[in-house]
Image 1 (cartoon, helix red, strand yellow):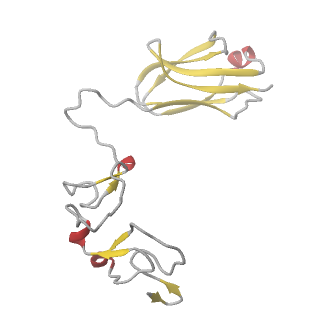
Image 2: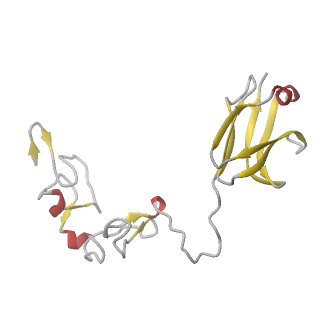
Image 3: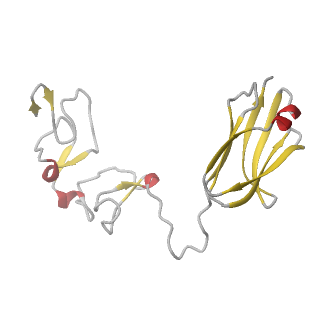
Length: 182
Protein backbone atom coordinates (compact mmCIF):
# COMPACT_ATOMS: atom_id res chain seq x y z
CA UNK A 1 0.00 0.00 0.00
CA UNK A 2 2.94 2.37 0.03
CA UNK A 3 5.09 3.44 -2.84
CA UNK A 4 7.84 5.85 -1.92
CA UNK A 5 6.42 8.58 0.31
CA UNK A 6 2.88 8.30 -1.10
CA UNK A 7 0.07 5.91 -0.29
CA UNK A 8 -1.10 3.82 -3.24
CA UNK A 9 -3.83 1.30 -3.77
CA UNK A 10 -6.17 -0.29 -6.29
CA UNK A 11 -8.85 2.36 -5.90
CA UNK A 12 -7.14 4.87 -3.65
CA UNK A 13 -4.36 5.20 -1.11
CA UNK A 14 -4.90 5.75 2.61
CA UNK A 15 -8.26 7.24 3.58
CA UNK A 16 -9.89 8.29 6.81
CA UNK A 17 -13.52 7.99 5.70
CA UNK A 18 -15.94 5.17 4.84
CA UNK A 19 -16.29 4.15 1.17
CA UNK A 20 -19.00 1.84 -0.12
CA UNK A 21 -20.03 0.49 -3.54
CA UNK A 22 -16.61 1.13 -5.11
CA UNK A 23 -14.51 -1.45 -6.95
CA UNK A 24 -11.22 -1.80 -8.79
CA UNK A 25 -9.82 -4.43 -11.11
CA UNK A 26 -7.02 -6.34 -9.35
CA UNK A 27 -5.83 -7.90 -12.61
CA UNK A 28 -5.46 -4.79 -14.75
CA UNK A 29 -4.26 -2.51 -11.93
CA UNK A 30 -1.75 -4.94 -10.48
CA UNK A 31 -2.89 -3.77 -7.04
CA UNK A 32 -3.99 -6.38 -4.52
CA UNK A 33 -4.96 -3.93 -1.77
CA UNK A 34 -6.43 -0.48 -1.42
CA UNK A 35 -7.26 2.07 1.25
CA UNK A 36 -10.91 1.72 0.25
CA UNK A 37 -13.14 -0.16 -2.16
CA UNK A 38 -13.24 -3.82 -3.04
CA UNK A 39 -10.93 -5.59 -5.47
CA UNK A 40 -12.46 -7.78 -8.18
CA UNK A 41 -11.21 -9.91 -11.04
CA UNK A 42 -11.96 -8.75 -14.57
CA UNK A 43 -14.59 -11.49 -14.99
CA UNK A 44 -16.39 -10.21 -11.88
CA UNK A 45 -16.49 -6.63 -13.17
CA UNK A 46 -17.46 -6.92 -16.85
CA UNK A 47 -20.86 -7.96 -18.17
CA UNK A 48 -22.26 -10.30 -16.99
CA UNK A 49 -20.73 -9.12 -13.73
CA UNK A 50 -20.87 -11.00 -10.41
CA UNK A 51 -23.88 -10.56 -8.16
CA UNK A 52 -21.63 -9.18 -5.42
CA UNK A 53 -20.18 -6.45 -7.68
CA UNK A 54 -21.90 -3.07 -8.20
CA UNK A 55 -24.13 -3.69 -5.18
CA UNK A 56 -26.70 -0.90 -4.65
CA UNK A 57 -25.69 0.92 -7.83
CA UNK A 58 -28.49 3.00 -9.38
CA UNK A 59 -29.06 1.42 -12.79
CA UNK A 60 -31.08 4.47 -13.86
CA UNK A 61 -27.76 6.36 -13.74
CA UNK A 62 -25.43 3.51 -14.76
CA UNK A 63 -25.87 1.16 -17.72
CA UNK A 64 -24.38 -2.29 -18.31
CA UNK A 65 -22.19 -2.62 -21.40
CA UNK A 66 -23.84 -5.84 -22.55
CA UNK A 67 -22.09 -5.94 -25.95
CA UNK A 68 -18.65 -4.92 -24.61
CA UNK A 69 -18.43 -2.09 -27.17
CA UNK A 70 -18.99 1.09 -25.14
CA UNK A 71 -16.76 0.55 -22.09
CA UNK A 72 -15.16 -2.88 -22.67
CA UNK A 73 -17.95 -4.57 -20.71
CA UNK A 74 -17.71 -2.33 -17.63
CA UNK A 75 -20.75 -0.24 -16.61
CA UNK A 76 -20.85 3.32 -17.93
CA UNK A 77 -22.67 6.52 -16.96
CA UNK A 78 -25.79 6.86 -19.11
CA UNK A 79 -25.44 10.67 -19.17
CA UNK A 80 -22.00 10.38 -20.77
CA UNK A 81 -23.13 8.21 -23.64
CA UNK A 82 -26.18 8.62 -25.82
CA UNK A 83 -26.99 6.31 -28.69
CA UNK A 84 -29.29 7.15 -31.57
CA UNK A 85 -30.63 3.96 -33.03
CA UNK A 86 -30.31 3.59 -36.77
CA UNK A 87 -33.99 2.72 -37.08
CA UNK A 88 -35.04 5.70 -34.91
CA UNK A 89 -37.75 7.51 -36.94
CA UNK A 90 -37.05 10.84 -35.20
CA UNK A 91 -33.73 12.46 -36.14
CA UNK A 92 -31.66 14.02 -33.35
CA UNK A 93 -32.26 17.72 -32.71
CA UNK A 94 -29.47 19.91 -34.00
CA UNK A 95 -27.60 21.64 -31.23
CA UNK A 96 -27.90 25.42 -31.54
CA UNK A 97 -27.21 28.40 -29.33
CA UNK A 98 -27.28 32.17 -29.38
CA UNK A 99 -25.88 34.44 -26.72
CA UNK A 100 -24.78 38.02 -26.20
CA UNK A 101 -21.85 39.13 -24.07
CA UNK A 102 -20.91 40.93 -21.95
CA UNK A 103 -23.99 40.72 -19.77
CA UNK A 104 -25.24 43.25 -18.91
CA UNK A 105 -24.24 45.03 -22.10
CA UNK A 106 -23.03 48.62 -21.64
CA UNK A 107 -21.76 48.83 -25.23
CA UNK A 108 -22.71 46.97 -28.41
CA UNK A 109 -22.46 43.31 -27.36
CA UNK A 110 -20.84 40.45 -29.21
CA UNK A 111 -23.39 38.00 -30.54
CA UNK A 112 -22.33 34.37 -30.61
CA UNK A 113 -24.32 31.99 -32.80
CA UNK A 114 -23.86 28.25 -33.16
CA UNK A 115 -26.10 26.19 -35.38
CA UNK A 116 -25.66 22.73 -36.83
CA UNK A 117 -28.36 23.60 -39.36
CA UNK A 118 -26.48 25.04 -42.34
CA UNK A 119 -28.10 27.61 -44.58
CA UNK A 120 -29.85 30.94 -44.28
CA UNK A 121 -30.66 31.94 -40.69
CA UNK A 122 -31.78 35.14 -39.08
CA UNK A 123 -31.39 36.62 -35.64
CA UNK A 124 -33.87 39.02 -34.09
CA UNK A 125 -34.12 41.20 -31.01
CA UNK A 126 -37.46 41.49 -29.23
CA UNK A 127 -38.51 43.73 -26.34
CA UNK A 128 -40.33 42.33 -23.30
CA UNK A 129 -43.67 42.97 -25.02
CA UNK A 130 -42.66 40.60 -27.82
CA UNK A 131 -42.25 43.37 -30.41
CA UNK A 132 -39.49 42.75 -32.94
CA UNK A 133 -37.06 45.67 -32.83
CA UNK A 134 -34.35 44.42 -35.16
CA UNK A 135 -33.69 41.50 -37.47
CA UNK A 136 -30.87 40.50 -39.78
CA UNK A 137 -29.98 37.49 -41.89
CA UNK A 138 -26.80 35.46 -41.71
CA UNK A 139 -25.53 32.37 -43.49
CA UNK A 140 -24.51 29.42 -41.32
CA UNK A 141 -22.03 26.80 -42.42
CA UNK A 142 -22.71 24.71 -39.31
CA UNK A 143 -20.00 26.41 -37.25
CA UNK A 144 -19.84 29.08 -34.58
CA UNK A 145 -20.08 32.76 -35.59
CA UNK A 146 -19.24 35.75 -33.41
CA UNK A 147 -19.82 39.36 -34.42
CA UNK A 148 -20.54 42.72 -32.82
CA UNK A 149 -24.16 43.80 -32.84
CA UNK A 150 -24.47 46.38 -35.65
CA UNK A 151 -24.60 50.04 -34.61
CA UNK A 152 -28.10 50.51 -36.08
CA UNK A 153 -29.42 47.73 -33.82
CA UNK A 154 -27.55 49.00 -30.73
CA UNK A 155 -29.06 52.51 -31.21
CA UNK A 156 -32.58 51.01 -30.99
CA UNK A 157 -31.98 49.54 -27.51
CA UNK A 158 -32.39 51.47 -24.27
CA UNK A 159 -31.81 50.15 -20.74
CA UNK A 160 -33.85 47.00 -20.29
CA UNK A 161 -34.23 43.29 -20.92
CA UNK A 162 -34.49 41.91 -24.45
CA UNK A 163 -34.77 38.54 -26.13
CA UNK A 164 -32.25 37.61 -28.83
CA UNK A 165 -33.50 34.73 -30.98
CA UNK A 166 -32.03 32.57 -33.70
CA UNK A 167 -34.53 31.67 -36.41
CA UNK A 168 -34.76 29.52 -39.51
CA UNK A 169 -37.63 29.83 -41.96
CA UNK A 170 -39.63 32.01 -39.53
CA UNK A 171 -39.31 29.48 -36.71
CA UNK A 172 -37.36 30.19 -33.54
CA UNK A 173 -34.58 27.65 -33.03
CA UNK A 174 -33.20 29.03 -29.76
CA UNK A 175 -33.30 32.29 -27.77
CA UNK A 176 -31.49 33.95 -24.90
CA UNK A 177 -31.75 37.05 -22.73
CA UNK A 178 -29.90 40.31 -23.39
CA UNK A 179 -29.70 42.87 -20.58
CA UNK A 180 -28.76 46.42 -21.65
CA UNK A 181 -27.39 49.08 -19.26
CA UNK A 182 -26.13 52.10 -21.22
